[in-house]
Amino acid sequence: MSADDVDVSVIIPIHNAGQWLDECLESLFQQQHTLNVEVSLFLDSCTDNSKTIVEDCWTSRLKDIGYIVTVSKEDNGTPKGVGYAKNRAVEQSRGKYLCFLDSDDTMLPQRIQKQYELAYLNTNAIVGCRFKRDPPDSTVRYTKWANELSETQLNIQVYTSHGPTVIMPTWFCHRNVFDSVGGFSEAGKGTPEDLIFFYKHIGSGGKIIRHDDELLIYRYHPHATTFSIHEQTIWDLRIQELQEKVLKNWDTFTIWNAGKQGRKFYRSLTKENQRKVTAFCDVDVKKVGSYYTYEETKEKPKPKVPIIHFSESKSSLIICMKMELTGGQFEENLRSLHLEEGKDYHHFN
Image (cartoon, rainbow, N blue to C red; front, top):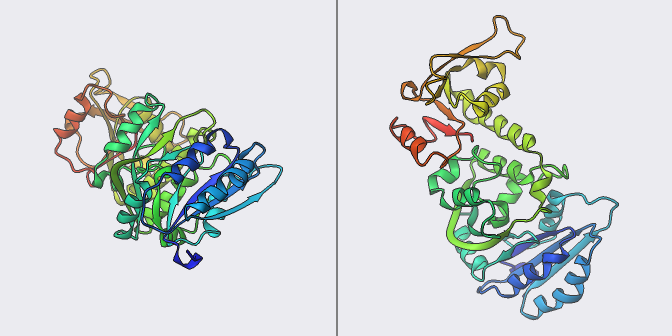
Protein backbone atom coordinates (compact mmCIF):
# COMPACT_ATOMS: atom_id res chain seq x y z
CA MET A 1 0.00 0.00 0.00
CA SER A 2 1.33 3.42 -0.94
CA ALA A 3 0.79 6.55 1.09
CA ASP A 4 -1.52 7.90 -1.62
CA ASP A 5 -3.92 4.98 -1.16
CA VAL A 6 -4.70 5.44 2.55
CA ASP A 7 -8.43 5.35 3.23
CA VAL A 8 -8.36 5.93 6.98
CA SER A 9 -5.77 7.31 9.39
CA VAL A 10 -6.24 6.32 13.02
CA ILE A 11 -5.17 9.34 15.10
CA ILE A 12 -3.67 8.49 18.49
CA PRO A 13 -2.23 11.22 20.76
CA ILE A 14 -0.12 9.75 23.56
CA HIS A 15 1.14 11.12 26.86
CA ASN A 16 2.25 8.65 29.52
CA ALA A 17 -0.29 6.02 28.53
CA GLY A 18 1.89 2.98 29.09
CA GLN A 19 -0.55 1.22 31.41
CA TRP A 20 -3.28 1.21 28.74
CA LEU A 21 -1.39 1.36 25.46
CA ASP A 22 -1.06 -2.38 24.84
CA GLU A 23 -4.83 -2.84 25.05
CA CYS A 24 -5.43 0.18 22.84
CA LEU A 25 -3.10 -1.03 20.09
CA GLU A 26 -4.26 -4.61 20.43
CA SER A 27 -7.73 -3.37 19.50
CA LEU A 28 -6.22 -1.99 16.28
CA PHE A 29 -4.64 -5.35 15.61
CA GLN A 30 -8.06 -7.00 15.96
CA GLN A 31 -9.92 -4.69 13.56
CA GLN A 32 -11.90 -6.35 10.77
CA HIS A 33 -12.05 -4.18 7.65
CA THR A 34 -11.43 -4.06 3.92
CA LEU A 35 -9.66 -0.68 3.96
CA ASN A 36 -6.17 0.70 3.63
CA VAL A 37 -5.38 2.00 7.10
CA GLU A 38 -2.62 4.11 8.58
CA VAL A 39 -1.87 4.43 12.30
CA SER A 40 -0.58 7.91 13.15
CA LEU A 41 0.83 8.27 16.66
CA PHE A 42 2.26 11.36 18.32
CA LEU A 43 4.07 10.99 21.65
CA ASP A 44 3.89 14.22 23.64
CA SER A 45 6.82 14.36 26.09
CA CYS A 46 6.28 10.91 27.55
CA THR A 47 8.31 10.01 30.61
CA ASP A 48 6.98 6.46 31.03
CA ASN A 49 7.37 3.40 28.79
CA SER A 50 4.97 4.59 26.07
CA LYS A 51 7.77 5.10 23.54
CA THR A 52 9.12 1.59 24.11
CA ILE A 53 5.68 0.04 23.75
CA VAL A 54 5.06 1.85 20.45
CA GLU A 55 8.46 1.47 18.82
CA ASP A 56 9.70 -1.87 20.16
CA CYS A 57 6.47 -3.81 20.55
CA TRP A 58 3.78 -2.58 18.18
CA THR A 59 5.18 -0.79 15.14
CA SER A 60 6.43 -3.94 13.46
CA ARG A 61 3.35 -5.98 14.47
CA LEU A 62 1.01 -3.46 12.89
CA LYS A 63 3.12 -3.18 9.77
CA ASP A 64 3.16 -6.96 9.43
CA ILE A 65 -0.63 -7.01 9.01
CA GLY A 66 -0.63 -4.24 6.41
CA TYR A 67 -0.91 -0.98 8.32
CA ILE A 68 1.20 2.05 7.51
CA VAL A 69 2.58 3.24 10.86
CA THR A 70 3.65 6.86 11.28
CA VAL A 71 5.24 7.86 14.60
CA SER A 72 6.70 11.13 15.80
CA LYS A 73 7.50 12.55 19.20
CA GLU A 74 8.62 15.62 21.07
CA ASP A 75 10.46 15.73 24.36
CA ASN A 76 9.77 19.01 26.10
CA GLY A 77 9.93 19.92 29.75
CA THR A 78 6.16 20.13 29.75
CA PRO A 79 3.75 18.28 27.44
CA LYS A 80 1.95 20.62 25.06
CA GLY A 81 -1.46 19.03 25.51
CA VAL A 82 -3.93 16.78 23.79
CA GLY A 83 -5.03 19.37 21.21
CA TYR A 84 -1.44 19.90 20.12
CA ALA A 85 -0.79 16.15 19.96
CA LYS A 86 -3.93 15.49 17.91
CA ASN A 87 -3.03 18.23 15.44
CA ARG A 88 0.50 16.87 14.94
CA ALA A 89 -0.83 13.34 14.46
CA VAL A 90 -3.32 14.57 11.86
CA GLU A 91 -0.74 16.71 10.04
CA GLN A 92 1.63 13.78 9.57
CA SER A 93 -1.16 11.45 8.46
CA ARG A 94 -2.35 10.81 4.90
CA GLY A 95 -5.78 9.21 5.09
CA LYS A 96 -8.86 10.64 3.42
CA TYR A 97 -10.76 9.92 6.64
CA LEU A 98 -9.71 10.36 10.27
CA CYS A 99 -10.55 7.92 13.06
CA PHE A 100 -9.74 9.39 16.48
CA LEU A 101 -8.71 7.06 19.28
CA ASP A 102 -7.55 8.00 22.76
CA SER A 103 -4.63 5.95 24.03
CA ASP A 104 -6.55 4.77 27.11
CA ASP A 105 -9.54 3.46 25.13
CA THR A 106 -10.13 0.39 22.98
CA MET A 107 -12.09 -0.25 19.79
CA LEU A 108 -14.43 -3.11 19.11
CA PRO A 109 -13.49 -5.10 15.97
CA GLN A 110 -15.95 -3.49 13.53
CA ARG A 111 -15.36 0.13 14.49
CA ILE A 112 -13.23 1.33 11.57
CA GLN A 113 -15.28 -0.42 8.88
CA LYS A 114 -18.70 0.61 10.19
CA GLN A 115 -17.88 4.24 10.85
CA TYR A 116 -16.09 4.54 7.53
CA GLU A 117 -19.20 3.35 5.70
CA LEU A 118 -21.29 6.00 7.46
CA ALA A 119 -18.75 8.80 7.06
CA TYR A 120 -18.34 7.98 3.35
CA LEU A 121 -22.00 8.92 2.87
CA ASN A 122 -21.76 12.00 5.14
CA THR A 123 -18.56 13.87 4.37
CA ASN A 124 -19.71 17.01 6.22
CA ALA A 125 -20.35 15.20 9.50
CA ILE A 126 -18.59 14.20 12.67
CA VAL A 127 -19.62 10.55 12.97
CA GLY A 128 -19.67 9.15 16.48
CA CYS A 129 -20.91 5.85 17.83
CA ARG A 130 -22.46 4.35 20.90
CA PHE A 131 -19.95 3.21 23.50
CA LYS A 132 -19.47 0.98 26.51
CA ARG A 133 -18.11 2.44 29.72
CA ASP A 134 -15.27 0.79 31.63
CA PRO A 135 -16.00 0.24 34.47
CA PRO A 136 -19.69 -0.21 33.56
CA ASP A 137 -21.03 1.51 36.69
CA SER A 138 -19.18 4.80 36.06
CA THR A 139 -21.05 7.88 34.75
CA VAL A 140 -24.25 5.86 34.28
CA ARG A 141 -26.58 8.83 33.62
CA TYR A 142 -24.13 10.49 31.21
CA THR A 143 -23.59 7.26 29.27
CA LYS A 144 -27.33 6.69 28.99
CA TRP A 145 -27.89 10.26 27.79
CA ALA A 146 -25.15 10.13 25.16
CA ASN A 147 -26.11 6.69 23.85
CA GLU A 148 -29.84 7.37 23.67
CA LEU A 149 -29.97 10.80 22.02
CA SER A 150 -32.11 10.76 18.88
CA GLU A 151 -30.69 11.81 15.51
CA THR A 152 -32.33 15.22 15.92
CA GLN A 153 -31.16 15.68 19.51
CA LEU A 154 -27.55 15.06 18.51
CA ASN A 155 -27.67 18.41 16.72
CA ILE A 156 -29.83 20.42 19.15
CA GLN A 157 -28.85 19.26 22.66
CA VAL A 158 -25.44 20.75 22.09
CA TYR A 159 -25.60 23.10 25.12
CA THR A 160 -26.72 20.36 27.51
CA SER A 161 -23.65 18.56 28.77
CA HIS A 162 -20.00 19.09 29.64
CA GLY A 163 -19.00 17.77 26.23
CA PRO A 164 -20.21 17.17 22.69
CA THR A 165 -23.28 15.05 22.00
CA VAL A 166 -20.95 12.45 20.49
CA ILE A 167 -17.94 11.88 22.72
CA MET A 168 -14.59 12.77 21.21
CA PRO A 169 -12.96 9.31 21.44
CA THR A 170 -15.66 8.04 19.04
CA TRP A 171 -15.12 10.71 16.36
CA PHE A 172 -14.65 9.65 12.75
CA CYS A 173 -14.76 12.18 9.90
CA HIS A 174 -13.57 13.15 6.45
CA ARG A 175 -10.33 15.12 6.53
CA ASN A 176 -12.19 18.14 5.13
CA VAL A 177 -14.09 18.41 8.42
CA PHE A 178 -10.83 18.82 10.32
CA ASP A 179 -9.44 21.26 7.76
CA SER A 180 -12.57 23.42 7.69
CA VAL A 181 -12.44 23.89 11.48
CA GLY A 182 -8.70 24.46 11.41
CA GLY A 183 -7.72 21.81 13.92
CA PHE A 184 -7.95 21.67 17.70
CA SER A 185 -7.11 24.42 20.15
CA GLU A 186 -3.52 24.20 21.34
CA ALA A 187 -4.05 26.27 24.47
CA GLY A 188 -2.93 23.28 26.53
CA LYS A 189 -3.98 21.73 29.81
CA GLY A 190 -7.41 22.76 31.04
CA THR A 191 -8.77 23.55 27.57
CA PRO A 192 -11.87 21.69 26.32
CA GLU A 193 -10.42 21.36 22.82
CA ASP A 194 -13.06 18.86 21.73
CA LEU A 195 -15.98 21.12 22.70
CA ILE A 196 -14.38 24.13 21.01
CA PHE A 197 -13.89 22.08 17.82
CA PHE A 198 -17.45 20.76 18.08
CA TYR A 199 -19.00 24.24 18.32
CA LYS A 200 -16.92 25.55 15.42
CA HIS A 201 -18.01 22.58 13.33
CA ILE A 202 -21.74 22.98 13.91
CA GLY A 203 -21.39 26.76 13.66
CA SER A 204 -20.12 26.40 10.09
CA GLY A 205 -23.01 24.11 9.13
CA GLY A 206 -21.41 20.77 9.95
CA LYS A 207 -23.57 17.84 11.01
CA ILE A 208 -23.42 15.33 13.85
CA ILE A 209 -24.24 11.66 13.20
CA ARG A 210 -23.93 8.60 15.44
CA HIS A 211 -23.55 4.96 14.46
CA ASP A 212 -25.98 3.09 16.66
CA ASP A 213 -23.68 0.14 17.39
CA GLU A 214 -21.41 0.14 20.43
CA LEU A 215 -18.00 0.36 18.77
CA LEU A 216 -15.73 1.76 21.50
CA ILE A 217 -14.90 0.98 25.12
CA TYR A 218 -14.52 4.36 26.85
CA ARG A 219 -12.34 4.05 29.94
CA TYR A 220 -13.08 6.03 33.09
CA HIS A 221 -10.12 6.69 35.40
CA PRO A 222 -8.86 9.55 37.58
CA HIS A 223 -5.96 10.41 35.24
CA ALA A 224 -8.20 11.08 32.23
CA THR A 225 -7.65 14.42 30.48
CA THR A 226 -11.23 15.47 31.13
CA PHE A 227 -10.46 15.85 34.84
CA SER A 228 -7.94 18.62 34.09
CA ILE A 229 -10.67 20.87 32.68
CA HIS A 230 -12.37 23.16 35.17
CA GLU A 231 -16.16 22.94 35.21
CA GLN A 232 -16.47 26.74 35.05
CA THR A 233 -14.44 26.84 31.82
CA ILE A 234 -16.93 24.52 30.13
CA TRP A 235 -19.89 26.38 31.63
CA ASP A 236 -18.62 29.70 30.23
CA LEU A 237 -18.08 28.20 26.77
CA ARG A 238 -21.60 26.72 26.72
CA ILE A 239 -23.11 30.03 27.89
CA GLN A 240 -21.25 31.91 25.16
CA GLU A 241 -22.47 29.56 22.44
CA LEU A 242 -26.08 29.58 23.66
CA GLN A 243 -26.15 33.37 23.75
CA GLU A 244 -24.66 33.69 20.28
CA LYS A 245 -26.67 30.95 18.59
CA VAL A 246 -30.03 31.08 20.39
CA LEU A 247 -30.68 33.96 22.77
CA LYS A 248 -29.71 36.69 20.34
CA ASN A 249 -32.68 35.56 18.22
CA TRP A 250 -35.19 35.63 21.09
CA ASP A 251 -36.89 38.81 22.30
CA THR A 252 -37.93 37.28 25.63
CA PHE A 253 -37.62 33.94 27.39
CA THR A 254 -38.31 32.06 30.62
CA ILE A 255 -35.82 30.07 32.69
CA TRP A 256 -37.19 26.75 33.93
CA ASN A 257 -35.73 26.31 37.43
CA ALA A 258 -35.99 28.99 40.08
CA GLY A 259 -33.40 27.20 42.18
CA LYS A 260 -29.62 27.32 42.34
CA GLN A 261 -28.90 26.18 38.76
CA GLY A 262 -31.43 28.52 37.15
CA ARG A 263 -30.19 31.50 39.12
CA LYS A 264 -26.57 30.75 38.25
CA PHE A 265 -27.61 30.61 34.61
CA TYR A 266 -29.29 34.03 34.92
CA ARG A 267 -26.23 35.57 36.57
CA SER A 268 -24.02 34.22 33.76
CA LEU A 269 -25.92 36.06 31.04
CA THR A 270 -25.03 39.42 29.57
CA LYS A 271 -27.08 42.34 30.86
CA GLU A 272 -28.87 42.47 27.52
CA ASN A 273 -29.98 38.85 27.83
CA GLN A 274 -30.86 39.23 31.52
CA ARG A 275 -33.35 41.92 30.49
CA LYS A 276 -35.00 39.40 28.15
CA VAL A 277 -35.85 37.07 31.04
CA THR A 278 -39.53 37.62 31.77
CA ALA A 279 -39.82 34.94 34.45
CA PHE A 280 -38.46 31.89 36.16
CA CYS A 281 -40.83 28.93 36.21
CA ASP A 282 -40.97 26.11 38.73
CA VAL A 283 -43.23 23.44 40.25
CA ASP A 284 -42.42 24.40 43.85
CA VAL A 285 -45.49 26.20 45.23
CA LYS A 286 -43.27 27.83 47.87
CA LYS A 287 -41.41 29.68 45.12
CA VAL A 288 -44.33 30.43 42.79
CA GLY A 289 -45.67 33.96 43.25
CA SER A 290 -42.41 35.37 44.64
CA TYR A 291 -39.56 37.16 42.89
CA TYR A 292 -35.89 36.61 42.30
CA THR A 293 -33.95 39.80 42.99
CA TYR A 294 -30.52 40.06 41.40
CA GLU A 295 -28.69 41.62 44.33
CA GLU A 296 -25.21 41.45 42.79
CA THR A 297 -25.98 43.89 39.99
CA LYS A 298 -25.10 47.58 40.22
CA GLU A 299 -28.25 48.48 38.31
CA LYS A 300 -30.85 50.57 40.10
CA PRO A 301 -33.52 49.54 40.63
CA LYS A 302 -32.23 46.00 40.97
CA PRO A 303 -33.87 43.56 38.52
CA LYS A 304 -36.75 41.56 40.05
CA VAL A 305 -37.87 38.54 38.05
CA PRO A 306 -41.22 36.90 38.88
CA ILE A 307 -41.46 33.17 39.55
CA ILE A 308 -44.45 31.50 37.90
CA HIS A 309 -45.84 27.98 37.75
CA PHE A 310 -44.44 25.98 34.87
CA SER A 311 -47.93 25.54 33.37
CA GLU A 312 -48.12 29.31 32.79
CA SER A 313 -44.87 29.45 30.84
CA LYS A 314 -44.79 29.90 27.11
CA SER A 315 -42.06 29.44 24.58
CA SER A 316 -39.26 30.41 24.57
CA LEU A 317 -37.75 28.37 27.41
CA ILE A 318 -34.27 27.60 28.64
CA ILE A 319 -34.47 24.49 30.79
CA CYS A 320 -31.91 24.28 33.59
CA MET A 321 -33.15 20.97 34.95
CA LYS A 322 -31.32 17.67 34.97
CA MET A 323 -33.19 14.88 33.26
CA GLU A 324 -34.43 11.64 34.82
CA LEU A 325 -34.14 12.70 38.44
CA THR A 326 -37.87 12.99 39.26
CA GLY A 327 -39.20 9.59 38.24
CA GLY A 328 -40.40 10.99 34.93
CA GLN A 329 -42.51 13.83 36.43
CA PHE A 330 -40.40 16.65 34.97
CA GLU A 331 -40.44 15.03 31.53
CA GLU A 332 -44.23 14.65 31.73
CA ASN A 333 -44.61 18.30 32.75
CA LEU A 334 -42.53 19.36 29.77
CA ARG A 335 -44.53 17.22 27.35
CA SER A 336 -47.74 18.77 28.63
CA LEU A 337 -46.71 22.14 27.18
CA HIS A 338 -46.59 20.70 23.63
CA LEU A 339 -43.43 22.57 22.70
CA GLU A 340 -40.84 21.69 20.07
CA GLU A 341 -37.27 21.14 21.24
CA GLY A 342 -34.74 23.24 19.35
CA LYS A 343 -37.40 25.78 18.40
CA ASP A 344 -39.44 26.55 21.51
CA TYR A 345 -36.96 25.41 24.13
CA HIS A 346 -33.37 24.35 24.70
CA HIS A 347 -31.81 22.32 27.48
CA PHE A 348 -28.98 23.81 29.52
CA ASN A 349 -28.54 21.38 32.38
